[in-house]
Amino acid sequence: MLDDLRKARLEKLKLLKDAGISPYPSKSSFKISPIPLIKKNFKKLSKTNKVVAVAGRITAKREHGGSVFIDISDGKAISQVFLGKNKLPKGSFELFSKAVDIGDFVAVSGKPFYTKRKEPTIEAKKWEMLAKSLLPLPEKWHGLQDPEEKLRKRYLEILFNPEIREMIEKKALFWNSVREFHSKNDFLEVETPALEVTAGGADANPFITRHQALDMDVYLRISAGELWQKRLMVAGFKKTFEIGRIFRNEGMSAEHLQDYTQCEAYWAYADYKDMYEFLKECYIFVAKKTFKTLKFKIRGFDVNLGGKWPLIDYAEEIKKQTKIDIWKASEVEIINKVKSLNTKSESGSRIKLIDALWKYCRKNIGGPAILINEPKFMSPLAKSSKANPNVTERFHFLIGGSEMGQGYSELNDPIDQRERFIVQEQMRKEGDESAQMKDEDFIEALEHGMPPTAGHGFSERLFSFLIDKPVRENQIFPLVKPKK
Image 1 (spheres, one colour):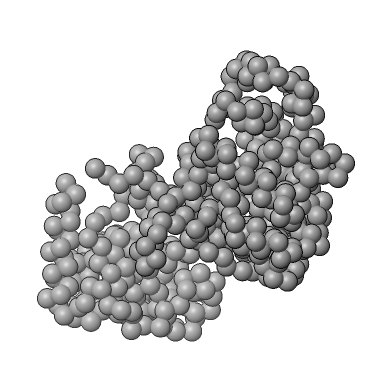
Image 2 (spheres, helix red, strand yellow; image 1 turned 120 degrees about the vertical axis):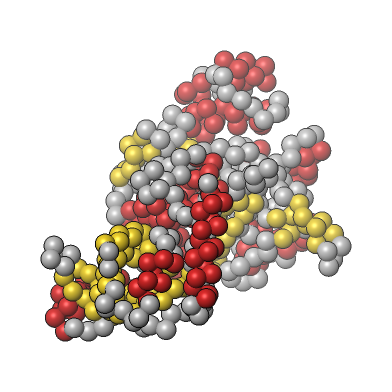
């Protein structure tokens, strides 16, 4: 069926070529105006008898003997166009009627007028083919039905689903607002390497690729330049940030992807408290700009970013919800509790078991809230707390039962950093692929001296939570397996 339709359109393509018309010109010879602008000034234009030109995809075609009505969409609005046999140059109407289909891109030049039904319409004097479509569009009202096909042919889903188009526009506004907030607070936007010899700055399993020119394997970065931006603090910069793609070779879920956008920022002479206050204001600013509200329904929780953001202690919250004191409980007690809660641990290590307990607890917190006092063994890059050396000056934002951004007072003691890297390296040897790699070059940079510094990081997952849709659905072109 589809092959027959394509064959018919190829024949129409030949009709255009035989008539001396290029089916795929570089541009229109008309001076094109945006359809929304024409519609806004239509009444005035119809009185002046001025010729205008519009261009876009034909979304509807209605033939009535010696006339044709079409709808043209330029992605922002739709214009009705009338083509009359007696209004066009000789042979032009017949060629349009025979060779032009719904889905084709055309340009039309003509005069605005109102039909008998008072519909604003452009009476075509000339038309041009801009791109001949060889495959038909999905039926307008039903479109694509298979969920995987919708992702595979995302361009068609966008074409017919205004919600997805709106999401794309909102996401652009979201990141522009993030950029605006950091820039107006004197953070310098930087670009750091996406290919690294050592994948650092996060607990994640990296992708490996081959660098042919240097004849070595390299990693795709797992953070938006954390260890590089800290080097910039060593170099004397006070405030930097980066918005860029990061890559993590891990599982997929409603909250996690392997290829996504993240923002990270670093602020010299500040600590984690300064940073969580800054980031809280950033979230409020971005939410207002993007969604025009601070109140959201997220994963069943009512979340008000304009309300209170209480501080939640890591160990106390686990004890409150599970009755387990992570500082005193035996490994057997923790294992039994993890099993009884029907939650999973990535491994049998004490660190991973405690992390499993926390992940169970956070699902019950709607937020917004600020998690603090995370154990030192969970935070290899964060400063230890002065009040309690067993915990770090690290925070997580809790929204909708999940962690939605984090930051900490960065570790700038090179000796302590080396020791923590050694612990992480041992965890990797024991099979924990997400444990951090030892980066000797970074340690050497720290030995030259890095001022007290705070950092933060959050990803496009925040956007997906605020819009309350799975993160995969909020990517413009999510990764899907090719058809076999």
